[in-house]
Image (cartoon, rainbow, N blue to C red; front, side, top):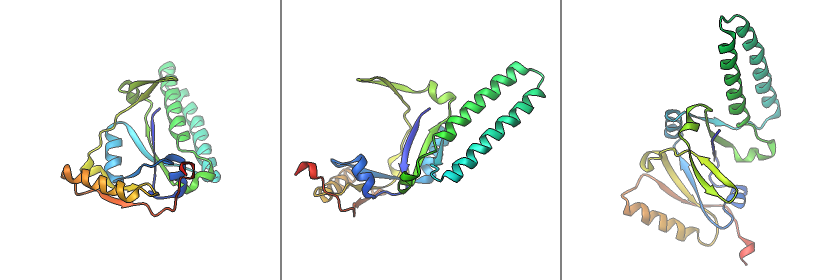
Length: 193
């Protein structure tokens, strides 16, 4: 299973602290274009679920679907084939569902994920080597002019310089559609002092 995590909040202090302590950017994608790209490659764009009550409802529906598939299996002519199909469907649904669950303490992130289907995507994945072994990944094509709406520079003393450099890069590539935003978060990296 592959996933790509995103947030609806492009400029929250906890995200900068957790993921870009030494600097970085937040890339704002077009939801419509991202969904189109995800769908075309066998992925789903899905909102993470934080509320325990909602998680319980999803789990209840999931376990009820298991009971329904048992009934369908009994009515099948080819039990072995139907059993394999049902098991794979349940496993796939299980992983897609659980990839969306997050502890409620992370609710501020308002996270969305692009989640792969367990089927054909795996066959098309690539791998790169790291110290811990091989890590599989899948490349989703991104069209700069259509898919990206804005880029927010990380907070700190270099934000204006970063924004200027990004604007200059975009101008050299004749890209005017992407808005460059300077972070409003009051963040200082005390480790560098």
